Length: 77
Image 1 (tube, rainbow, N blue to C red):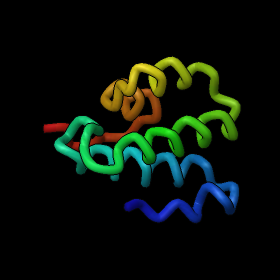
Image 2 (tube, rainbow, N blue to C red):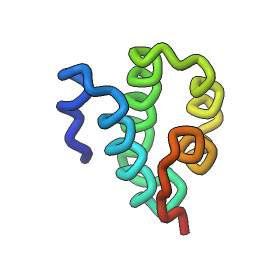
Image 3 (tube, one colour):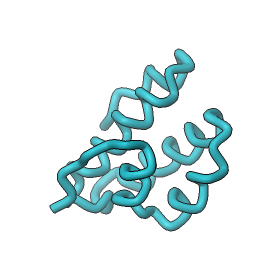
């Protein structure tokens, strides 16, 4: 499971990067054991960041678009 201490420390962008990396390691598409829990933490992190533009991508669980919106390059194979 991911280390989500960054969320509690208010370092939301760093936390989101860690969370998306964890999701990318789950079959490259954010769908594996524990993925639902990670997506829930992603959702609350986006809320804390006050980024409604990302909320729809989180709702759709669109890992590629979410990473792209944040300027992250993840291996999603």
